[in-house]
Length: 126
Image (cartoon, rainbow, N blue to C red; front, top):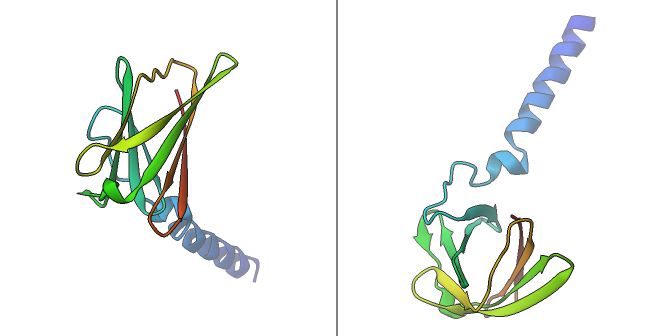
């Protein structure tokens, strides 16, 4: 009887692990542009630090998202200071912000809004 209950508990736990949000995410996605990749809202968001700007690549299962339908902002928290910049569409699946630097140790919040006023927020740590 005890073995049967243990087997049932293990079977239930296995099923829950298989259908967990982490298992259903884009866990097999890899950064395509040398940045930091997060999967959220069934999309991939890759943030790339450059010398004096950033690029944010957005794709849906490998297909670039129409970024002209998005408005966005990036907020950088580093060394006790906060800086913000607008994200501007820069081609298929790409948004950029200029005159922005993300130092090591920074926390970054990217906020995007689509034409339906749906807001998406993605957080990064460097």
